[in-house]
Image 1 (cartoon, one colour):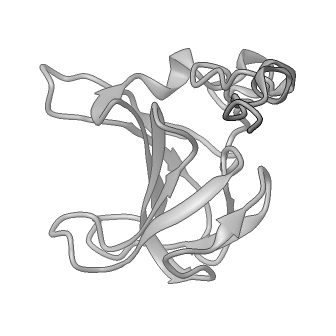
Image 2 (tube, one colour):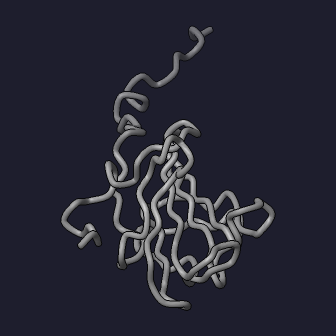
Length: 148
């Protein structure tokens, strides 16, 4: 009787390790920076101004884990899970082009800018690391920073 076979060690070695810190971010929209992350913990993201209907893009590849208007204060909302570490949040959209479970690519249109649940047209954008808000300006590429 041959000995029980062992798991193929080579198969596990050939797999690339997943680096959950390595996300290739892009700006979801271009526009005026309306407000910054912080304000004594009150602002969990940044606000980027623009025009109603302006395309909102996924800031990185991922899976849509929420698409709807059930979270008070966020209006029409999309949440994308990028990996086990990061989520991104896109709030106050006029309309949403994706549904829960959709896989999205970086720069793919996922929504149109609006003012649902907000005082003016703009995108509220958050990056969450292990569920905790972090400053998106620290993750987004500075070369495309819309700040004046």
